[in-house]
Image (cartoon, rainbow, N blue to C red; front, side):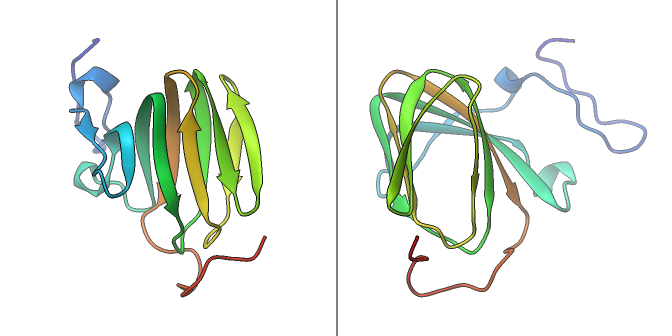
Length: 133
């Protein structure tokens, strides 16, 4: 079934990650960073989306914040994630919860792969500035 996709019966999607095109994250948001939208609205997902990020060594996802939470699981590699004022060293097997409106950014010390799940709509009110945390 590798590389194949099935959308049958109940509307499920079963596929291999390589069947989803890897696209660069725009330069104004990140450097040396790639994304695959594994599960998104186009797949019939109503509540959560799943993305796979690959950040090359020395890559960086720039500081940003938004009114939805993130759930992250590091699959491979090592790097750092800043959430608010605190920076965490992460590697394969680590998981993170990033609250809505908390400023965050990522750095890859070696090639870093992580799954990122986000809700399909905001989970908090939009703020003009990030949380002070």
